Image (cartoon, rainbow, N blue to C red; front, top):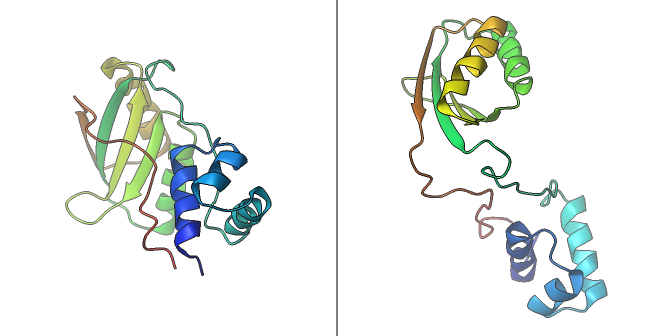
Length: 154
């Protein structure tokens, strides 16, 4: 069970996981040692699953975002396992979701340019059978990030 202070710690760590412990403890009105124990407990209890650096996509040479909508003719476990292996092996695919509706999967793909999609497409379809792919290039990112609401955590 977490309290409002834990939620504030989680919110602050989501914004910047490199925040010094002294600054974090001041922000939540705790001693450094008490704050450190809370962070450790939040990690042990699985509220914090990992810490990572968010890289600048422009500086990393992959400013183009493409959204691929996928339909498959197969829905068996063997196909799904092939698909999982295929998308894990393609680093440009940065997100994948199985969805309801007209399509079965949505992929978010980070590319150096729109033309590079053909390379990713060929690698994907060489590894797994796909019935249909529809792709759209993002023209503008209106909201991006990995932060999630912390108010629902129990």
